[in-house]
Image 1 (tube, rainbow, N blue to C red):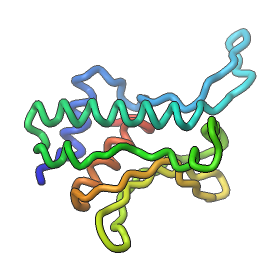
Image 2 (image 1 turned 60 degrees about the vertical axis):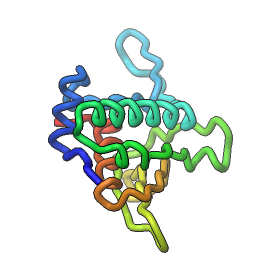
Image 3 (image 1 turned 120 degrees about the horizontal axis):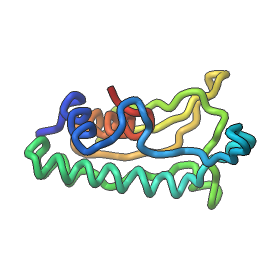
Image 4 (image 1 turned 30 degrees about the vertical axis):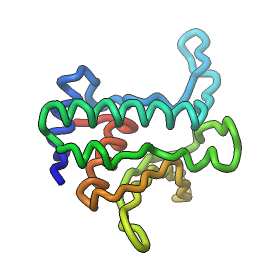
Length: 155
């Protein structure tokens, strides 16, 4: 399976007009009074998951059109699952996190799982989004790189 490298992904994001070092997906809404943030609210996790899926599909489509990935790499993406929304509808994204981490791990019996987790200041981790892929570790790593760039920005 042919997958895009991190440098190819960053070059594509830059070419598409995404701002360096700026997250593509906004996680919070703010109330600002006279230039001062008075309240920060996490956006709905389902809404963020929908946006994550839209951006990921768009990037995979463009990568395929530019021959950076093959059809298998594009076809092995089923969509991110918003894990937190399994328990409660309209759950807001936590605003107390310190970091967002995106990584791929081998599944227990088959395939690979790509995690998007938040980590708070006390090192407590919470799984927010999950993607299962049967495209191999390289495909999982590419999806993790896409999520990392969308949530944290790129260089």
